[in-house]
Structures are given as structure tokens and as C-alpha cells.
Image 1: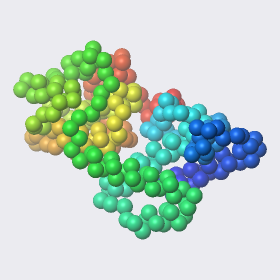
Image 2: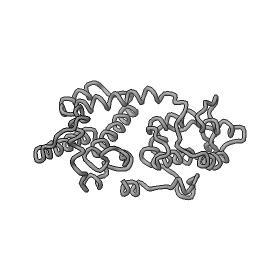
Image 3: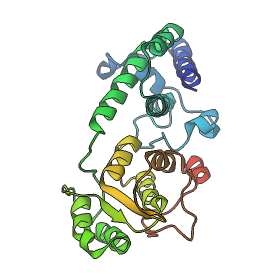
Length: 263
């Protein structure tokens, strides 16, 4: 899949180059160090890039500069690469230098992208070890709604710490969620795709696993990092409609298909 994405990146840049041969645009001064980016901005996104599963809402942000051009496709592909590199690292413990060298040899024109993706992945892995806080983009009223919904799933003794945690303050113990872990995790997936939480899936996963446990049938258990990752990034194992919590008008649930169609 990694090589497939790099192949698509190469195709996008070939299209941008083909367009410049036809129109020969003058590169503005502010893009003098970003020539290829400017060329991508000149080519509209075609339907092919809207329908393919690769260009889905997991990686698309319609606030990106040039969202509706090849530059938007390029940025989407880079996000997909970050996800794939993180997945490889998570499943195998590390990404071998031989693999990276093979990528550079196969896609020499993508050397900068390969280097940037690996640097970003290393930075995220390093910073995601023990994240103390995440930034929720909520009004005081919406934060009150969210806390009011969630606190019923925590013992009264944990509720002050829950409020402090959501306000960005550190807490000295893990909080016990009295329910299935997927109900809690899905709320954060929804916050993310509704634009109310801009942290990476890695950061959200590490924050959740670092601050919460849940009450399983056999007792209190740590959140499963594999399950949290699958729910956040793939909607795999998310709760059904009846089990979903925090059903606010401002926090609508969207299926993966709906997210793709609205991207």
C-alpha cells in the first residue's frame, strides 16, 4: 500500500508538470521555493480523486489550501502515508533502513516526501509517549454538555478529575470508565471528524490509554491500544446506534461512507 501511495504521488506530480507544459504559468514570487506546490494548485481535482477509497475523509481536510486542486490530493496522500508509516511502526516495532532505502531507490523523485514523512512519524511517536493533554475546540456550553454526558459513566470520586482532564489539567491517576471502551473511544473519533479535535490518531490513542481504564466483565482493565487504534482510524468495532453516547446535535455521527461522500 505504501508503494501504491507513492505511485499516486508520482502520478499527481506528472499531471502538474504536464499542465505547465501546456500553459507555462509564471511562478509568483511567494512560491519561488515551492514551485511544484504552485503547479499542483493550477490543476483542478477531477472526479477520480473524489470517488477512490484512497482519498477518503480520514485524510482530507477541506480547509487545506488548494483543497479542490491537485495540491489537495497531494496533501491527502501525504496524510495517508503518515498513517501507513505509523501503522507499520506500530505493528512491527520499527521501520527498517533497508525498507526506507528501497523506497528511495524506487521513487527517487519522492525522496523529500519520504524524508518528511519519516521525520513527522518519529516526532509524533516521540511526543505521543505520555501526552498530558489534548486541545478540544469546544465552547463552554458544549464542554458542559460533553462532561454532563460522560460523567455518569464515572464514579463520583473520579468526576472532578474528569473535568480537570478535559480542561487541560494533569491528573494523578487513571479514571475508570464504567462501560465498554468502544463507547468512550467513539466519542473522540466523532469529535475529530466533526472538526472539534485536531490531534492525530496517535496522540488521541496515547492520551486515552494514558488516562483511562474501563470496567470489563472480569474487572478493571486498561484500554486496548489495538482496539482504540482500530476504532479511531477505521471505525472498526465502534458501538451501534443504541449504544452510542453523547448524541448531541453539534456532534453528529457519520458513517464512513457518508464521510467519503461529503469529502
